[in-house]
Length: 372
Image (cartoon, rainbow, N blue to C red; front, side):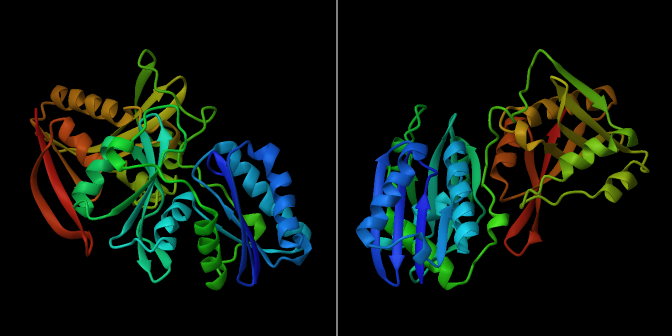
């Protein structure tokens, strides 16, 4: 199988050309993908004495990383596949980075691949090794560095092998917390894509999609503390609630339209939406049991996360509970949801119980309570 693979998600461009086991690599280092991609590819083909027409497949890295770089890489992969009828495989930048450990044969624990995402955040994904292959244990994620380190400590007891890429971010570096930065390598890129071809993980070029874990600045919903309003949710808001519930979060059990509609039939059910700058940023729902509120759902729009929206919703519910004479607020949270656990503890909730294997064999429910 003759495979061309490339990675344009970071600050440099990596190429791997595998011609039935004979390999040719190129790493441009720091470069502008739009200016260097095709001259480098031409040089690679010349070195290998081949061309695009001789290939069987193309492998592309679909993110997370540079918004512009991801779009460039996917556009080229789609064009090559369409024009030359090449098969497509794709992987994440976190996966390619983790393959550094496999190539170097330095794996003794699950691998946690981490990339600096800027704004005190990191992208990360955890894998286990199976020979010279990787199996994802989690989906790619993005979170604040403090939540990430807490997650690794509480869920994995720090028993992971971290590989970190600083991504040349101008914001704070996490070398002090995560170790020295390691670069993407064409050797790791090649092994990643070869394994996908071997496993026949082919994808139609029309279905190639970017992995954007963070919203672009143009897409982001900004929480303006001087322009916040809360709306008492009713059936008239069902479309807005359904939009918030249909964000395809892999680790969240979304409520359906039917479930939401049926909830409003319960006189004890209440919900509030938060708006800022004319946009709905999220909602919270509760059951009013007179002397106590039980929180059912807190959902924040994906383009408004990591800005304190959930905290504002909780503060508003505290206010409503006191006005209604409630003395305590209850909730239940997955013990693997470290960011939520951290938030609830910050907001004054205390653990009062647990339900073993409530969500799955390895996931317990933590019962928490806040006294007003």
